[in-house]
Image (cartoon, rainbow, N blue to C red):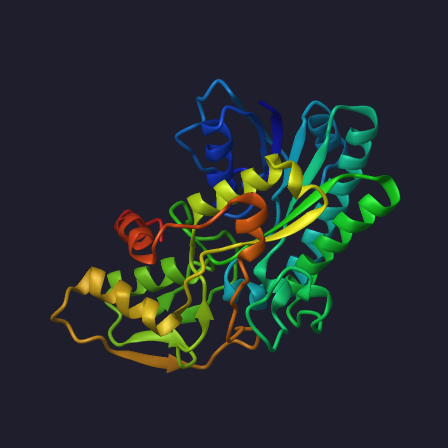
Length: 341
């Protein structure tokens, strides 16, 4: 078993990753500064195999110190959110995440040279395929299609260039993983001053599922959706993504490779909205919606090729959308009632 540093350990996907690492018997060091949601607690906080450090992933000295005593480094820290985040914090997303990534790579290079670090697993994003015009998107397409238009997508593409450049110059081994549309529990209202309204409801600045749930729970009728609702996504359970990320970290065939991690199932936003509506409202209340003006960077289609992850890693995301929502809808509903959303 390995000792693993996870930056962004208190984040949405980070929480699932730490849980999966501990489940597989790894020792985990988590680093987070609680910048998005504020202090959060997890069921594994008292696990003897887990040590949490409150600190900033831009602190190169701190990350170097932690990474030097670890076998693996999952570089997950980032300023991240849903579509509204891309617009409210366009510059901050670019500038903050570039500083995090530079510090992470500097630290990993030093830890590889002077410590026991063997590899970095970088968290990229499906947004690297933002500008594609053909689907499904397979590994390698990110270098063939035009670069992303959003600052967030552009920066995530830069993450992959950091990974490959650090290998080219310093022989720092890497694996790149691209999660697609994570769905799960644990998201709260993001900290920050920007207010984004959807109809009469203030968004959580997070992702489409919790935002749809909270709007329906708060009684929005008709439901406000962005655009016509024809946007295609592959909603993937956080536990499945964590299994894929940790498998990529562990697997010898993942060395210096990149992987799309996603369910193979396509769902439109409108289909998603109606499924959530039925779970909350039941079968008798008519599903009503109105279309709001879409955001500029609301990608209309994001469809991955998942062949490589299946054939090389033996990884498949098997949790159905219905199963995900059966967990997430009650969680978000309770968060609304508790005043957390």
